Length: 173
Image 1 (cartoon, helix red, strand yellow):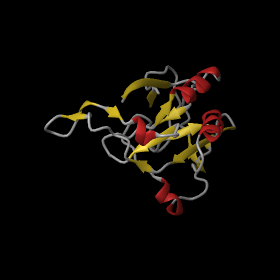
Image 2 (tube, helix red, strand yellow):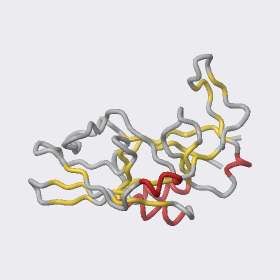
Image 3 (spheres, one colour):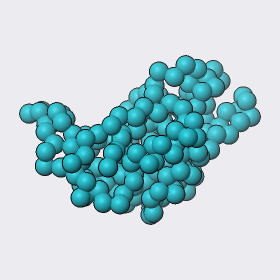
Image 4 (cartoon, helix red, strand yellow):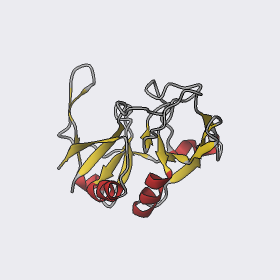
């Protein structure tokens, strides 16, 4: 069993820019329990000078996934909630289909995980027994804000040539 975190590659050249948010700035994480507080669709706009490259995973202002990623994740995991976030370029008369993904925060950490005295991560280890049949999840710990995906999900996404995602393997016991 192999798992990876997904993170936005912020070094992409000619990346899109939101008009009111910093795509590389701070972010907020929403969980499945927040679904009732979030509108079914919220539009974001691109600046006039926005680049052309749209990553398939955007971390800020909230984690968002492209339509391609949504279709893959929907196959692998039941019970996920997606909220539409169309990204609009007025100048180019173009709309990009994105979604925010709402998952339950789950306790998947192994007792072998190690932390420094200040609480930062020294060694992250996931517990295979706790993961069970899950292919995508969020940890219920604010120190870990990125989703975790199984090797099967990662391979499926790579076959679809997703852009702008950094994959980092995580130890599983």
